Image 1: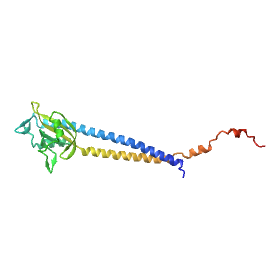
Image 2 (image 1 turned 90 degrees about the vertical axis):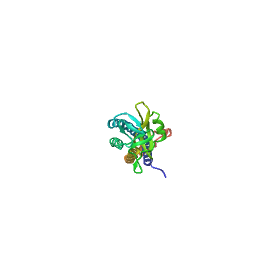
Image 3 (image 1 turned 120 degrees about the vertical axis):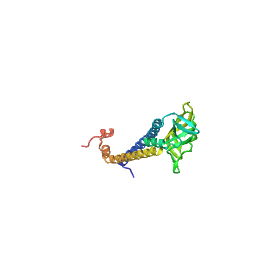
Image 4 (image 1 turned 90 degrees about the horizontal axis):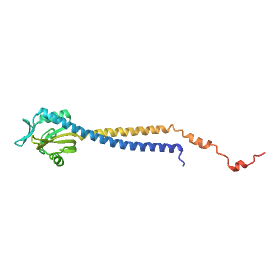
Length: 228
């Protein structure tokens, strides 16, 4: 059974469109995922700077330790829910203040209560308590966040704690899912247009050209003497 020319062209066109859509879709989704991750990381970094300014405004003074507790100026930071809740309200992030590697003020909940007394991941503490800034994904009380940690120093420059801001990975995941759904829908629409386009391909023109084209006579035909 011979396949018609129209069927061949239809299959070729659909296959080409599908291949192009697949390649473009994969590249676009991958690029968008990278941009989303970068945007979330930038938000965490920016929110950390904002949080430190809010802390300076609400609790003026230097960070220092008194009798094993963290203070800022005259304000006791251990258990300071007002400060972390205000920062969280303004940034829509999770907020934690550490004394060394122990949470002393946080809005992160664990089993229905604030997760004070718990510690950050070792790889985070090793970076920040040695003077670095940690920006990246980290697991906080069993939940993944895009995080930014910065060291807290007293007036002598000694590192005495950490300040944390975390943007929930749920936001990034929701954005990725939404964009992927849009990309899939766009690919389906492109396929429908390809199918519709096949209805307007002048396939009959191909057979017309092949049957109606006049070919030059052979030498044998030219040498024949017409009858009569």
